[in-house]
Length: 345
Image (cartoon, rainbow, N blue to C red):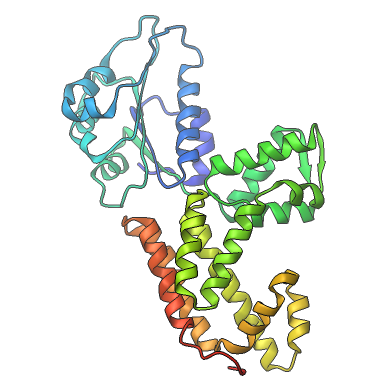
Protein backbone atom coordinates (compact mmCIF):
# COMPACT_ATOMS: atom_id res chain seq x y z
CA UNK A 1 0.00 0.00 0.00
CA UNK A 2 1.01 3.60 -0.48
CA UNK A 3 1.69 5.94 2.40
CA UNK A 4 0.71 9.56 1.91
CA UNK A 5 3.41 12.08 2.93
CA UNK A 6 1.36 13.24 5.92
CA UNK A 7 1.13 9.64 7.19
CA UNK A 8 4.83 8.84 7.02
CA UNK A 9 6.18 10.42 10.27
CA UNK A 10 3.51 8.82 12.44
CA UNK A 11 3.93 5.43 10.76
CA UNK A 12 7.72 5.49 11.16
CA UNK A 13 7.30 6.13 14.87
CA UNK A 14 4.80 3.28 15.28
CA UNK A 15 5.00 0.85 12.34
CA UNK A 16 2.33 -1.78 11.84
CA UNK A 17 3.82 -5.16 12.89
CA UNK A 18 1.82 -6.80 10.10
CA UNK A 19 3.98 -5.04 7.50
CA UNK A 20 6.91 -7.18 6.38
CA UNK A 21 8.27 -5.02 3.52
CA UNK A 22 8.90 -1.26 3.49
CA UNK A 23 10.08 0.33 0.24
CA UNK A 24 11.58 3.83 0.24
CA UNK A 25 12.20 5.16 -3.26
CA UNK A 26 12.56 8.36 -5.25
CA UNK A 27 14.99 11.08 -6.34
CA UNK A 28 15.51 12.37 -2.79
CA UNK A 29 18.26 9.99 -1.71
CA UNK A 30 18.56 11.80 1.63
CA UNK A 31 14.90 11.16 2.47
CA UNK A 32 15.19 7.53 1.30
CA UNK A 33 18.14 6.95 3.61
CA UNK A 34 16.57 8.89 6.49
CA UNK A 35 13.27 6.98 6.26
CA UNK A 36 15.09 3.64 6.24
CA UNK A 37 17.27 4.72 9.17
CA UNK A 38 14.32 5.87 11.27
CA UNK A 39 12.26 2.75 10.61
CA UNK A 40 15.22 0.46 11.35
CA UNK A 41 15.91 2.33 14.58
CA UNK A 42 12.27 2.07 15.68
CA UNK A 43 12.04 -1.67 15.06
CA UNK A 44 15.40 -2.51 16.64
CA UNK A 45 15.19 -0.05 19.55
CA UNK A 46 14.51 -2.77 22.12
CA UNK A 47 16.60 -5.54 20.57
CA UNK A 48 19.68 -6.92 22.34
CA UNK A 49 20.50 -9.26 19.47
CA UNK A 50 23.71 -8.18 17.69
CA UNK A 51 22.57 -10.17 14.67
CA UNK A 52 19.13 -8.54 14.47
CA UNK A 53 20.22 -6.43 11.49
CA UNK A 54 21.22 -8.03 8.20
CA UNK A 55 22.38 -6.17 5.09
CA UNK A 56 22.74 -8.64 2.21
CA UNK A 57 24.11 -7.37 -1.11
CA UNK A 58 21.45 -6.76 -3.74
CA UNK A 59 23.45 -8.66 -6.37
CA UNK A 60 23.34 -11.83 -4.26
CA UNK A 61 19.60 -11.45 -3.70
CA UNK A 62 18.81 -11.11 -7.40
CA UNK A 63 20.86 -14.21 -8.20
CA UNK A 64 19.39 -16.39 -5.44
CA UNK A 65 15.75 -15.70 -4.52
CA UNK A 66 15.92 -18.02 -1.50
CA UNK A 67 18.25 -15.69 0.43
CA UNK A 68 15.64 -13.00 0.97
CA UNK A 69 12.94 -15.58 1.76
CA UNK A 70 15.18 -17.18 4.38
CA UNK A 71 16.13 -13.82 5.91
CA UNK A 72 12.47 -12.83 6.18
CA UNK A 73 11.70 -15.97 8.21
CA UNK A 74 14.92 -16.27 10.27
CA UNK A 75 14.47 -16.19 14.05
CA UNK A 76 16.23 -13.66 16.24
CA UNK A 77 18.56 -15.13 18.88
CA UNK A 78 17.10 -12.88 21.58
CA UNK A 79 13.51 -12.75 20.31
CA UNK A 80 11.72 -9.95 18.52
CA UNK A 81 11.84 -8.92 14.88
CA UNK A 82 14.93 -8.76 12.74
CA UNK A 83 15.49 -6.11 10.04
CA UNK A 84 16.86 -7.00 6.63
CA UNK A 85 18.08 -3.84 4.95
CA UNK A 86 18.66 -3.83 1.19
CA UNK A 87 20.27 -0.81 -0.46
CA UNK A 88 20.04 -0.19 -4.19
CA UNK A 89 16.88 -2.28 -4.58
CA UNK A 90 15.89 -3.04 -8.18
CA UNK A 91 13.05 -4.74 -10.05
CA UNK A 92 15.08 -7.95 -10.12
CA UNK A 93 14.15 -8.48 -6.47
CA UNK A 94 10.43 -8.73 -7.29
CA UNK A 95 10.16 -12.55 -7.62
CA UNK A 96 11.75 -13.20 -4.22
CA UNK A 97 9.79 -10.32 -2.71
CA UNK A 98 6.52 -11.91 -3.83
CA UNK A 99 7.53 -15.14 -2.06
CA UNK A 100 8.20 -13.14 1.11
CA UNK A 101 4.81 -11.41 0.95
CA UNK A 102 2.95 -14.66 0.24
CA UNK A 103 4.65 -16.69 2.99
CA UNK A 104 3.07 -16.82 6.49
CA UNK A 105 6.57 -17.56 7.82
CA UNK A 106 7.75 -14.06 6.89
CA UNK A 107 7.72 -12.10 10.15
CA UNK A 108 10.87 -9.98 9.94
CA UNK A 109 10.95 -6.56 8.27
CA UNK A 110 12.54 -6.11 4.86
CA UNK A 111 13.59 -2.46 4.36
CA UNK A 112 14.30 -1.61 0.74
CA UNK A 113 16.07 1.54 -0.46
CA UNK A 114 15.74 2.42 -4.14
CA UNK A 115 16.26 5.34 -6.49
CA UNK A 116 13.63 6.61 -8.87
CA UNK A 117 11.09 3.94 -9.82
CA UNK A 118 8.61 4.49 -12.62
CA UNK A 119 4.91 3.83 -11.90
CA UNK A 120 5.27 0.66 -14.00
CA UNK A 121 8.17 -0.65 -11.90
CA UNK A 122 7.40 -4.22 -10.82
CA UNK A 123 9.03 -3.65 -7.43
CA UNK A 124 6.97 -0.54 -6.78
CA UNK A 125 3.73 -2.07 -8.04
CA UNK A 126 4.20 -5.17 -5.88
CA UNK A 127 4.68 -3.13 -2.71
CA UNK A 128 1.85 -0.71 -3.47
CA UNK A 129 -0.58 -3.57 -4.15
CA UNK A 130 0.17 -5.67 -1.04
CA UNK A 131 -1.44 -5.27 2.38
CA UNK A 132 1.81 -6.58 3.92
CA UNK A 133 4.00 -3.87 2.36
CA UNK A 134 4.26 -0.10 2.29
CA UNK A 135 5.75 2.09 -0.44
CA UNK A 136 7.02 5.56 0.45
CA UNK A 137 7.83 7.96 -2.40
CA UNK A 138 10.60 10.42 -1.48
CA UNK A 139 10.82 13.67 -3.44
CA UNK A 140 12.98 16.74 -2.72
CA UNK A 141 11.25 19.02 -0.21
CA UNK A 142 9.50 22.06 -1.60
CA UNK A 143 6.87 24.55 -0.53
CA UNK A 144 5.37 23.74 2.86
CA UNK A 145 7.34 20.50 3.23
CA UNK A 146 10.60 22.43 2.80
CA UNK A 147 9.48 25.06 5.32
CA UNK A 148 8.58 22.32 7.83
CA UNK A 149 11.96 20.66 7.32
CA UNK A 150 13.76 23.97 7.86
CA UNK A 151 11.78 24.69 11.04
CA UNK A 152 12.38 21.18 12.40
CA UNK A 153 16.13 21.22 11.70
CA UNK A 154 16.60 24.69 13.17
CA UNK A 155 14.59 23.66 16.23
CA UNK A 156 16.80 20.59 16.65
CA UNK A 157 19.74 22.98 17.02
CA UNK A 158 17.83 25.30 19.38
CA UNK A 159 17.40 27.90 16.64
CA UNK A 160 14.53 29.81 15.08
CA UNK A 161 14.52 32.14 12.08
CA UNK A 162 13.19 35.64 11.62
CA UNK A 163 10.46 35.88 8.93
CA UNK A 164 12.97 37.40 6.48
CA UNK A 165 15.54 34.69 7.15
CA UNK A 166 12.92 31.94 6.90
CA UNK A 167 11.80 33.26 3.51
CA UNK A 168 15.40 33.47 2.30
CA UNK A 169 16.13 29.90 3.44
CA UNK A 170 13.00 28.56 1.74
CA UNK A 171 14.00 30.28 -1.52
CA UNK A 172 17.70 29.39 -1.36
CA UNK A 173 17.90 25.81 -0.12
CA UNK A 174 17.74 23.35 -3.00
CA UNK A 175 18.50 19.68 -3.51
CA UNK A 176 17.43 16.62 -1.58
CA UNK A 177 16.63 16.62 2.13
CA UNK A 178 20.13 15.40 2.99
CA UNK A 179 21.66 18.42 1.25
CA UNK A 180 19.18 20.75 2.99
CA UNK A 181 20.08 19.29 6.38
CA UNK A 182 23.79 19.63 5.65
CA UNK A 183 23.36 23.31 4.80
CA UNK A 184 21.34 23.91 7.97
CA UNK A 185 23.96 22.06 10.04
CA UNK A 186 26.53 24.43 8.57
CA UNK A 187 24.32 27.39 9.51
CA UNK A 188 23.95 26.08 13.08
CA UNK A 189 27.73 25.78 13.38
CA UNK A 190 28.08 29.34 12.08
CA UNK A 191 25.59 30.65 14.68
CA UNK A 192 27.43 28.72 17.38
CA UNK A 193 24.58 27.98 19.79
CA UNK A 194 20.86 28.39 20.49
CA UNK A 195 19.31 31.64 19.35
CA UNK A 196 17.76 33.53 16.48
CA UNK A 197 18.84 33.31 12.83
CA UNK A 198 18.55 36.69 11.11
CA UNK A 199 18.74 37.45 7.40
CA UNK A 200 22.38 38.54 7.53
CA UNK A 201 23.48 35.24 9.09
CA UNK A 202 21.44 33.19 6.63
CA UNK A 203 22.82 35.08 3.63
CA UNK A 204 26.37 34.78 4.94
CA UNK A 205 26.17 31.02 5.20
CA UNK A 206 23.64 29.39 2.90
CA UNK A 207 23.85 28.21 -0.69
CA UNK A 208 25.39 31.27 -2.38
CA UNK A 209 27.15 29.23 -5.08
CA UNK A 210 24.11 27.15 -5.99
CA UNK A 211 21.78 30.15 -5.87
CA UNK A 212 24.04 32.03 -8.26
CA UNK A 213 24.31 29.04 -10.60
CA UNK A 214 20.52 28.73 -10.79
CA UNK A 215 20.22 32.45 -11.49
CA UNK A 216 22.82 32.18 -14.25
CA UNK A 217 20.87 29.29 -15.75
CA UNK A 218 17.55 31.16 -15.63
CA UNK A 219 19.05 34.18 -17.40
CA UNK A 220 20.73 31.98 -20.01
CA UNK A 221 17.36 30.40 -20.81
CA UNK A 222 15.64 33.79 -21.05
CA UNK A 223 18.47 35.04 -23.30
CA UNK A 224 17.80 32.15 -25.67
CA UNK A 225 21.44 31.06 -25.29
CA UNK A 226 21.57 27.31 -25.95
CA UNK A 227 25.29 26.72 -25.40
CA UNK A 228 25.34 28.75 -22.17
CA UNK A 229 22.23 26.97 -20.90
CA UNK A 230 23.75 23.57 -21.64
CA UNK A 231 27.03 24.46 -19.96
CA UNK A 232 25.40 26.01 -16.88
CA UNK A 233 23.03 23.05 -16.51
CA UNK A 234 26.04 20.71 -16.36
CA UNK A 235 27.50 22.88 -13.60
CA UNK A 236 24.26 22.92 -11.56
CA UNK A 237 23.77 19.17 -11.90
CA UNK A 238 27.38 18.64 -10.76
CA UNK A 239 26.56 20.66 -7.63
CA UNK A 240 23.93 18.03 -6.78
CA UNK A 241 20.83 20.11 -7.45
CA UNK A 242 17.69 18.10 -8.29
CA UNK A 243 16.01 18.68 -11.65
CA UNK A 244 12.76 20.07 -10.19
CA UNK A 245 14.39 23.11 -8.49
CA UNK A 246 16.39 23.66 -11.69
CA UNK A 247 13.28 23.79 -13.86
CA UNK A 248 11.46 25.93 -11.31
CA UNK A 249 14.28 28.46 -11.10
CA UNK A 250 14.01 29.04 -14.85
CA UNK A 251 10.20 29.04 -14.71
CA UNK A 252 10.07 31.50 -11.81
CA UNK A 253 12.27 33.95 -13.70
CA UNK A 254 10.03 33.71 -16.76
CA UNK A 255 6.92 34.19 -14.60
CA UNK A 256 8.48 37.32 -13.12
CA UNK A 257 9.12 38.61 -16.64
CA UNK A 258 5.58 37.69 -17.70
CA UNK A 259 4.04 39.74 -14.89
CA UNK A 260 6.51 42.57 -15.47
CA UNK A 261 5.50 42.71 -19.15
CA UNK A 262 1.93 43.47 -18.09
CA UNK A 263 3.17 46.33 -15.90
CA UNK A 264 5.32 47.67 -18.74
CA UNK A 265 2.36 47.55 -21.11
CA UNK A 266 0.28 49.44 -18.54
CA UNK A 267 2.80 52.27 -18.55
CA UNK A 268 5.01 51.50 -15.55
CA UNK A 269 8.60 52.62 -16.27
CA UNK A 270 11.06 49.79 -16.73
CA UNK A 271 13.45 51.07 -14.05
CA UNK A 272 10.60 51.11 -11.53
CA UNK A 273 9.72 47.51 -12.43
CA UNK A 274 13.35 46.50 -11.91
CA UNK A 275 13.40 48.12 -8.47
CA UNK A 276 10.06 46.58 -7.52
CA UNK A 277 11.39 43.10 -8.32
CA UNK A 278 14.60 43.75 -6.35
CA UNK A 279 16.80 42.63 -9.23
CA UNK A 280 20.45 42.30 -8.23
CA UNK A 281 22.31 45.35 -9.54
CA UNK A 282 24.66 43.32 -11.76
CA UNK A 283 21.64 41.77 -13.49
CA UNK A 284 19.50 44.88 -13.88
CA UNK A 285 20.56 45.63 -17.46
CA UNK A 286 20.00 42.02 -18.53
CA UNK A 287 16.60 41.93 -16.82
CA UNK A 288 15.49 45.18 -18.47
CA UNK A 289 16.69 43.98 -21.88
CA UNK A 290 14.71 40.75 -21.50
CA UNK A 291 11.72 42.73 -20.26
CA UNK A 292 11.73 44.93 -23.38
CA UNK A 293 12.57 42.34 -26.05
CA UNK A 294 10.83 39.10 -25.06
CA UNK A 295 7.28 38.87 -26.44
CA UNK A 296 4.66 37.82 -23.89
CA UNK A 297 3.43 34.96 -26.08
CA UNK A 298 6.87 33.42 -26.34
CA UNK A 299 7.43 33.69 -22.60
CA UNK A 300 4.17 31.81 -22.07
CA UNK A 301 5.17 29.15 -24.63
CA UNK A 302 8.57 28.69 -22.96
CA UNK A 303 6.87 28.36 -19.56
CA UNK A 304 4.66 25.62 -20.97
CA UNK A 305 7.76 23.63 -22.02
CA UNK A 306 9.23 23.94 -18.52
CA UNK A 307 5.97 22.89 -16.85
CA UNK A 308 5.67 19.87 -19.15
CA UNK A 309 9.28 18.91 -18.41
CA UNK A 310 8.69 19.02 -14.65
CA UNK A 311 5.60 16.82 -14.97
CA UNK A 312 7.52 14.37 -17.16
CA UNK A 313 10.37 14.17 -14.63
CA UNK A 314 7.88 13.15 -11.94
CA UNK A 315 5.74 10.73 -13.93
CA UNK A 316 7.39 9.10 -16.93
CA UNK A 317 10.29 7.27 -15.32
CA UNK A 318 12.67 8.41 -18.08
CA UNK A 319 16.07 9.81 -16.98
CA UNK A 320 15.18 13.05 -15.22
CA UNK A 321 18.36 14.90 -16.21
CA UNK A 322 17.65 14.21 -19.89
CA UNK A 323 14.05 15.42 -19.60
CA UNK A 324 15.21 18.53 -17.73
CA UNK A 325 17.74 19.37 -20.43
CA UNK A 326 15.18 18.81 -23.17
CA UNK A 327 12.68 21.10 -21.45
CA UNK A 328 15.21 23.88 -20.91
CA UNK A 329 16.48 23.74 -24.49
CA UNK A 330 12.93 23.71 -25.83
CA UNK A 331 12.30 26.93 -23.89
CA UNK A 332 15.58 28.35 -25.19
CA UNK A 333 14.56 27.57 -28.76
CA UNK A 334 11.29 29.49 -28.35
CA UNK A 335 12.93 32.48 -26.68
CA UNK A 336 15.94 32.52 -28.98
CA UNK A 337 13.70 33.38 -31.93
CA UNK A 338 13.13 36.83 -30.46
CA UNK A 339 15.00 39.51 -32.42
CA UNK A 340 17.32 41.69 -30.35
CA UNK A 341 16.60 45.31 -29.64
CA UNK A 342 13.36 47.24 -29.72
CA UNK A 343 10.30 46.68 -27.60
CA UNK A 344 8.22 43.52 -28.11
CA UNK A 345 4.97 43.76 -26.20
